[in-house]
Each structure stands twice: as structure tokens, then as C-alpha cells.
Image 1 (cartoon, helix red, strand yellow):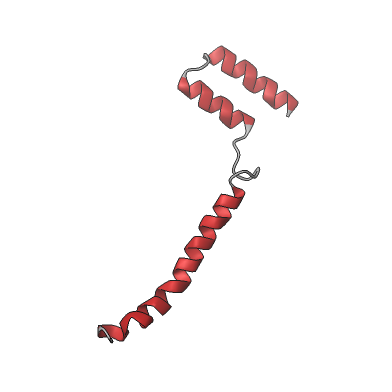
Image 2 (cartoon, rainbow, N blue to C red):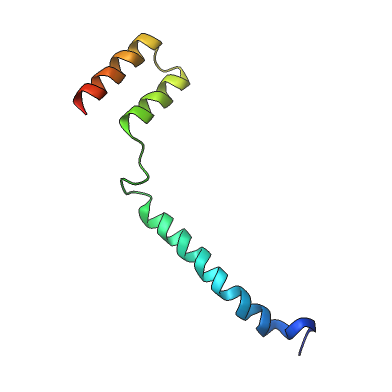
Length: 71
């Protein structure tokens, strides 16, 4: 039943706390995925749209200026 270096229970006892920590982090990220902490700001969305080519530089600057004035 015993394997070298302490056996299965030794390794399970060592690894289990790490598994719990990782699962806790995953659960926290899942819970926060819809919160404002992980959402893009309007300026970030605007930058992404500009980078995709959805608008030209003039339109980007106009919309960015409007966001900064209103927000």
C-alpha cells in the first residue's frame, strides 16, 4: 500500500490545500465576471472598436471627447 516518499495520503494531503485554493480563485473569478470590476470602460470599448477599424480617427476623437466631457 505504501509507495515511496510517504504514499498516496502524503501527496494527497500536500496537494489538497492547493487544489482548494485554485478552485476558490476560479469560483471568485466566476462570481466577479459580471461585476463592474471586470467590465471595460467606455473609452476601452471605443479604443477596441477603433483598433478593429470600425471607425476612422476623426470619429474616434469626437466620440472620445464626448465621453470625457460627459463622464
